[in-house]
Image 1: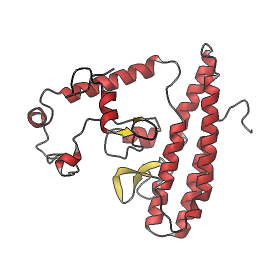
Image 2: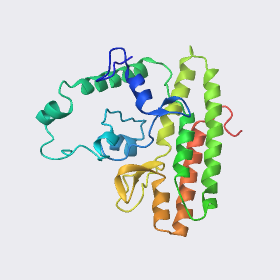
Image 3: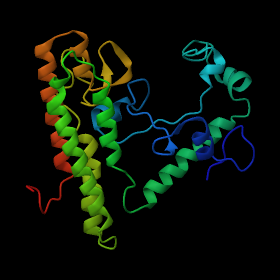
Image 4: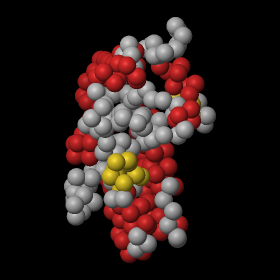
Length: 258
């Protein structure tokens, strides 16, 4: 729908995305989960609990000696003239991203039923948990069981949504409210404690040893890094509690205790 920047006519952003970053398992563009704290979305992500995304055009790191960013990033030379002369002379990529976000906002605002797929969260939760490497993997069993139960509830939620009366504004409101509350249900009001009370998202938040990027279940990964068995068990219990709380958000309110 949106023409791709710096590509032949007829190529869309979706085409480019599929070509350079395809998920071969799901046969769709690859998504990275977790936003970290490196931009303006931090407060929405960690304090408000809204669903957020970050989209960008970037360079091919393999062709640029795997540099982490362009050399002038966050220097006093990173100004308008630098962008126009070296990075995006005609602001083609800027325009493309503006169009892409604009179309996305239009779709979300004009569609009565929010287009969020909660089953993706199951994959994200499982992926985040599988990246944790404690000495004793069984210590994660309570969290693993909670994620499995979340997956079953998410599938049931999707199945119910297909039977929803889309002419009934009350049913639509119930459904949308559950989606809106899902992300918020992962916020721990206490955050990570100490000097990190603003890092509230239990699943995706910066770890204490890297406050720029997002880490899956950061409090657990911090405890594993410190090799503190008691703290690992404690943080697994907290994460399990919040995953089960999120699970309850998606339940059929007419059959909540099933």
